[in-house]
Amino acid sequence: MKPTTKKSTTKPVAVPKSKQGTFIPELGTLAGRALLVDMTVHYWVPKAADKDLSKETEEKYDTNGTFSKQLLDQHIIKPVHSAMKRCETTHRELTLPWEDGGARILNSAIYLRYEKETRDAVQKYIAEVDGLVSRWCQLIEAKKCTDKSFKPEHYPSANEIRSRYGVDIRYRPLPIGNDLRCDLAGDALAAVKAAIDSDQQDRIKAAVFNIAERIQEVLKHMVDTLNDYKPAVVEKGKTKKKAESTFRDSLVTNVADLGKLLPSLNVTGDPRIDAIATEMLKLSAVSPDSLRDDDKARAATVNAADAILSKVSDFI
Image (cartoon, rainbow, N blue to C red; front, top):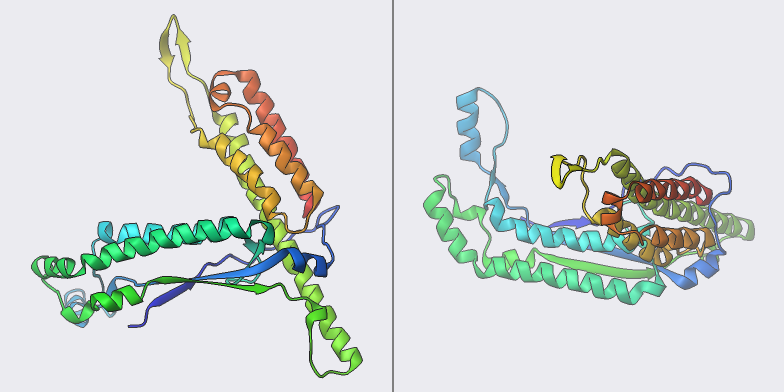
């Protein structure tokens, strides 16, 4: 069996029209401060089709199909999968969509941060894989004793398992129409360059729309949560009624984290995005306990978050 590979993907983005529109810099300027990065994760899926079990199932239930058997218990493989997801999440958090299911755009200003955080995530992933491989023989022996349908051919060797896991990260420059070099007549060459630049502008709009989605996600969650929250009712030092729709401190820290990250995601240099980042940091200065205990602080925070949300459509 070949190792499974999966590119860190993003769904195609439908970009709505707005009153002011996306701030699109000269493509040459953008190419000078951003690059494309592609992450491909390799992993092994611990499942195998079992012909004997499939035949037995067909005869027992009078149906057709293939029985796929889980080769390892979930608690054994879960740490590896969690570390793999961390690699993908780190990649997505620090970049914006560019190609459907492929490369993403990275602000060169945070290249060192991206390189460090992805390297740390990959090292954790490989460490989990190495831990799995070190126990491989014991795991197989345990399966022999507990799995009545055990078949040794379903289990690769420890060395083969290790070779199936890994992460590839590739960088490349941002292409622009003026970089095109090919043997075409003047008008045809100009038309192809224009088409490339037009395509790049559409991708820029999709990237900025992703920023808007991130802002909307954390702020709308804050607004909805604070509107639903009902503080506890306390009389004479005794709780008569528990608080409803309680929330964690992450309601505020998530806003702060995104506010800090936004300037680094702002590959177009749009001042409106930087301004919203500043407002989000100001919004997140309120303590979670104040939001739980102070009705006025809670109402003011909801109003401020709503005001920021109303501005988001200006830059998409």
